[in-house]
Length: 288
Image 1 (spheres, rainbow, N blue to C red):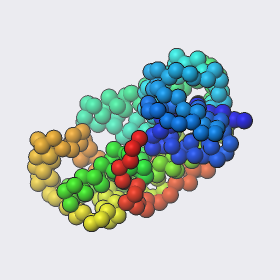
Image 2: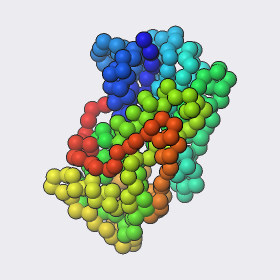
Image 3: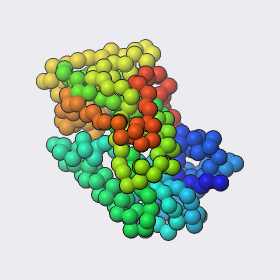
Image 4: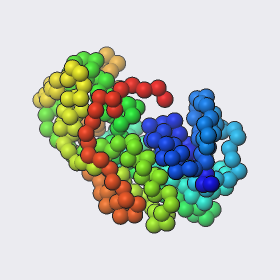
């Protein structure tokens, strides 16, 4: 029986990955910070990447669906024997490396260092490693972009964008990302490779938001404001303690195309993401 150790197993990508592994007959050891009940073929360990009591001595594959920098640090010192690692990073490694925001540049640097560390550790131990870089993640009500937009819009009855927010986006559903990790794991062509995982449709930012708002009841209004007025509104929101972490760099990106090529992932492991067809339940608040 194939065996897997899954970090970030209770997260928005980890949960659908567990379903795929279970349905395929894997024996899975899953890590969560919360207490969870074991099931046939699924053992939960309580802990995090800094401290996980009871880790197995050996598994066939290690999947990481959580923060890449923390996984890289764990992997560098881990004693678990494995021949295969599949870990999620982010396209932010490219998007934010030249950001005007120091925090975003730091995040991109952590991702770069995390990727380098995973590949270096894997090479030194003869382990086959693959890194997956999703774009805009959605689908489980736990992402920090589209679900956040939905909640703000429901709270106020509208959502404001600056005019010209037409930068292209490729939102990626969590189940498609989990399927990508599952499909990539047995494929030798993916060893030592990093893949962008965009969604199956490319659309302007404002159209993406409009499509999201149309799923909500009652549908909030989409306001497209001149930049000076939008900036005043954003400043007022910051002063009131809202929209924290949303600054000038994020606003500028709304007008920039953030588009990635899915061809390598399609070629090597059949990546086939869905078009962006949101429903309200994709942005409903869920417990972790």
